[in-house]
Structures are given as structure tokens and as C-alpha cells.
Image (cartoon, rainbow, N blue to C red; front, top):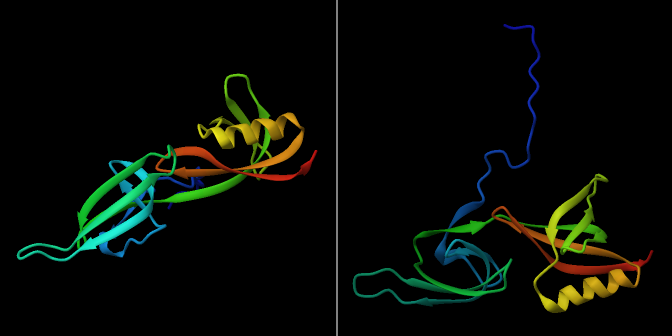
Length: 159
């Protein structure tokens, strides 16, 4: 063989799918599902009985985890549907820029500067007020299907 050593740069999501298949009949309330191409948290599931020639149908009502919009879908319970890989990560808030972007401190000590402030008015005012008061804030970032959004806030005390 060759005497040369091969070094490969590893990326955590190299070739990883953004979703995985799951049978529609096994998805429950508070689970996740992709409806109309958007990652959603299931808030309601109802199943209809099989018809004379058909499948049992599942009616899903979901809230988009990134935009908060309500979406609905009906699928045969025996068919597979997409379920998003959802990750939640906590970052410490360092700075808020004038253009609405936040600067976050990652676990390894580097900064993450590609996230906007959330669109939810209640959460937005909590973050801005807490930051203005000089509190140490930790924000929870939800990521699914290549998108990220700040979805929560923890106050870990004054700086």
C-alpha cells in the first residue's frame, strides 16, 4: 500500500439527512413531523377509520417550530412521512448588533454570529431588556432542516 497518510476533514452532518422516515400512524402529539416542507411540532392527531377500500387516515395539526405558523396535513396511517432531526443547543449571549443579529458564545469558546433575534415579540423584549440590564443570558437555539431560530431564554444571573 501507500506510505502516505490520509487526513479527512470531518463535518458532523456530512451526508446526513435532514429528515428520517417514520410511519404516519406512529407519530403522536408533541412529536415532530414535516408538513408542507416545514418542520412542525404536532399539537393534534386524529385518526379516521378505514373506508370500504381504503386506508386509515391520520390528520395532523402542527405548529412550525421556526415560524410559529399552524399547518395541517392528512396522510394514510400506513404510509411513511418525514420527521425532522431537531436539535436544541444553549449558547451564552454576548452581544446584540444594531441590524438584529446576535453574537453567541459556543461551548468550544468560538462565537456564532449568523443568528437573527427571534420574531416572537414576547421573547424579543425579554432578550433585549435582559441584555440592556446587563444580565448573563443563555438562549436556546432550535435547529431543524438546516434552519436555526432562538426559541428560549434563561437568565443565569448578573454579569
